[in-house]
Amino acid sequence: MSSIVKFNVLTVPEGAGATLEERFAKRAGLVEGQPGFEEFQLLRPVEGTDKYLVYTRWRSEEDFRNWVEGQAFQRGHAQAATESRQEGSPGGHGHGHGRGGPAATDSELWGFEVVQRVSARS
Image (cartoon, rainbow, N blue to C red; front, side, top):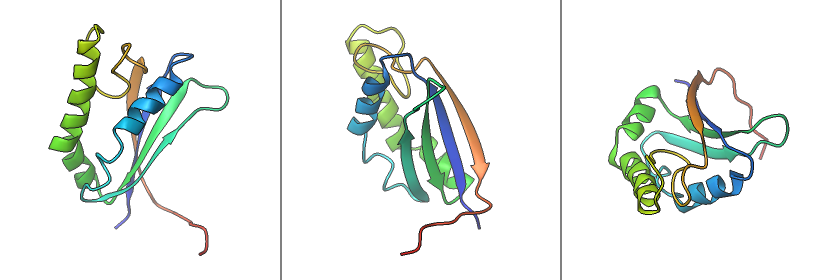
């Protein structure tokens, strides 16, 4: 059985990257204990784009769906929405919302199946 990878592609306006990174850091720990979770990375753009990539790797599509539909995911996104509303930002849900409004202005999800993987030798 091969893993699946999900990229949440976040469009982040100039100057909002540090805010987005801080918000993800505050939510650390919400996904690590989920069944089927294998890896998370927040990727900062360095040239030619304003898009951050949120990379997660899962044992299966079912594990990913269980996470998205589960309480920990809902709790993390509800917390972000609450922070946003408390501070006067309209709307506010999902990644990048919170103090000062959304840090990301758009989001799309890309999914892939891992067909080949190489790791460094120990």
